[in-house]
Image (cartoon, rainbow, N blue to C red):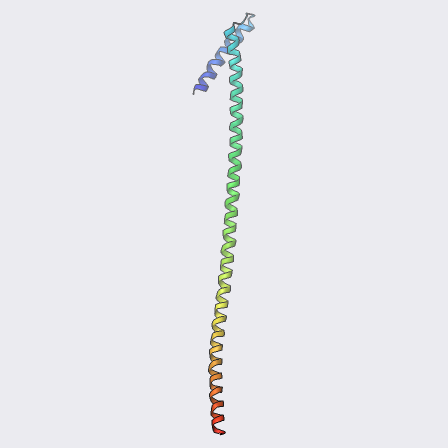
Length: 127
């Protein structure tokens, strides 16, 4: 608000001074100072506008980076979940195969035990 008021006051003073110069009158020291203040004010405003533009550009870049980061995170999460599902399914398959092998070994133990019992019988009968 103060900036706008200062700009308005300086603008009116500059118009008044411009009319004075146009009519061929000399400027007082205070009028020259007002013209200098007006020029300084305009340059300061230009600098602030340039800084604002740079901040807006930086904000847009940060937003773009944030979007890319979120996309990358979603991609990594998806790939991680896919890998987890794959490993889980492979582990389930291996667990089933181990269970099958365990049953087969138990059946072989029973068979070997039966064969052992048969051999012992045959050896006892042969004596």
